Length: 264
Image (cartoon, rainbow, N blue to C red; front, side):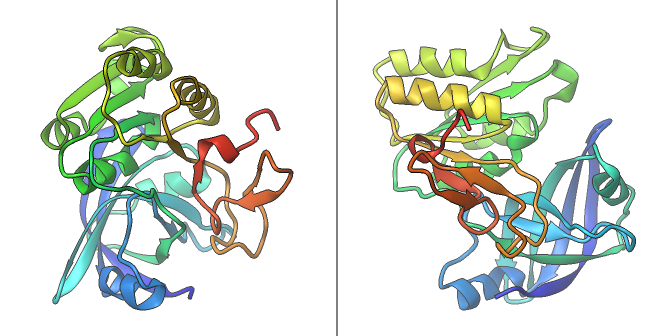
């Protein structure tokens, strides 16, 4: 059921020149997720935020963390201001109110045990929820363009047993892409239940290929433009290997990596 919420901004932090963290007071959104869907908010879900009166499409923003109490809940999101809508959102301040739909989508499916969390750029924040959800037993491999674009490192350090960093320019951690670190990690005697990945499609494709090579289950959170957020407008289509087409907002955003047609 699509439910709109008027959510006030109660905290805001500029993480990098282009990246903003916002915490929203969301009323009963956290508790009502169980009523509406039969399950609580799950890592990998997102909220859909209306960004300005003159802009038709809402913007999907992954949930980094959430807290629900009898007095009301909060949701924290991290996003990059790179288009008209998200630039508008980045200018909002504490005390402003946002029109929000959510929580939406199908998140990561996890079982007890450690996972290898692989994130790239703005795909990193939803994996922080995964780190918390898996009981601080997981390893994170995080990729950024450069040191000055790295985000949430302290948060991952506190929730993971190991955090490995890769940067495109070598200014922090490994000089290269995350799939190389994933390969190195899987070449060890690993004990992971699977890989949970979020980031740009080329990164996800490479990580999926490494996971398949080592026969490790892999789930990927796909990043696509969305219109309605509930599967009505059919904008966020993703081709599957079996010839079908699924939609990120309704069927995802999380899919089994082996089901995605990476060459479509």
